[in-house]
Image: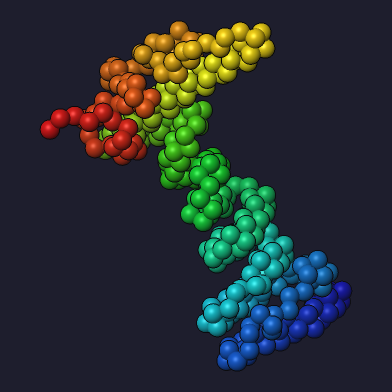
Length: 319
């Protein structure tokens, strides 16, 4: 009993010091001086030595200080230079403070440097709170909205979708973004995610919506596959032509006058060249439209207004 009393008494100076620091921040709300010059945050390792097990309590006090500091800096229209230190200290003292991780993504989204620091806090949150779906979900929004990194955003949303009690939204966002990555393998991953959404949809309306997304994603994957094969075909023909020129020069022979065509006359030539096993049909059993001029492959019109595909992906039909 005496030991606990002594520990409690020894904690009083620390609590008083933190309280005074908090009051000092509040006193600066007259905004006469730059608020950044008034902030002094002790390293979290030092604070942990003095809290005697009351880390979460100190984290709560710093949370209140953070709110005061952000408001003052915003009002003064000065950079919030200490946000990362606040969030890092708070989440070190209280690793389960989920709201602190999430709010960091909102308050530190002004510029690329701040966003990268916020992502460090969120990565720390993923490690400390591995069952939280909201933390990687917030990461996904930062990658997509602030850094314009579609792939990393999709990967973050996918991680969120696999957490316990995660709603359907992260999975749908991941599927959408994977489809936009212009990568065949990731498009196929998107297709699987949409198919899972279709299988899990609880109502007829949601199933119909997921089905349309699935069919459009299948078309998108087919178009990516065919367009990549056309590009590979052109590259192979160009490399073959350059090799022929080099060999004729080496052997002091007359160079060939006609380069091999880099444009196949039909899509079947892609199969003959070993670039495809077969020419795919769209989900309705219709062939894709190949136009030699510009190496274009287009889909036939859908019976509904496309959601995931661009109008330029479809062959135009006369009105």
